[in-house]
Length: 225
Image (cartoon, rainbow, N blue to C red; front, side, top):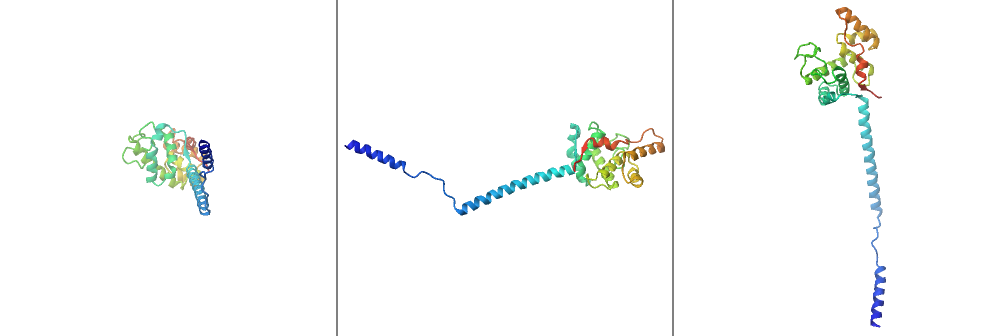
């Protein structure tokens, strides 16, 4: 009897233990629910803001265009190009400068921008390829192109007509920019060929510059609206 009573008690005790309260999820108060909703709204807002910032950065990159098909040698000079463009007030044209370098030398020679003949070169002779310091070549090239942009009245890569005039002027030098603006309102492939021929005749040379310089550079530079 005693043993049965104990067994029965133990059984009853076990059933009682089974009925003991189990851990339940704490019921949220109205204040807690409001706090959770606010945190979710804040997280969603931050996510949207990050997406907008990334989209804007990408948009700015496209607005400034991008250089393509660059050699490793040219890419190695990108930090120097960007710094020089900042110094001469044309940071949005750094990708254009890289495209020019690719066309001029592909980064294979010391005078990477082929800028020795520029009037802004004051440290070396003005003979072709005389510059032996790549960083100085970039400095002179950027300063020269900044002057070309000014003469072409081009302040943004979005101005494709102005950009093309500046590019052809970089190659021709002389008075090409003012001549093209006065006679044709800007650059055209036809007036580039005409100017080259006029200079050949005036100087008695068999060749003057590259009248197809613009398409040659633009194969390394893409611009999207």
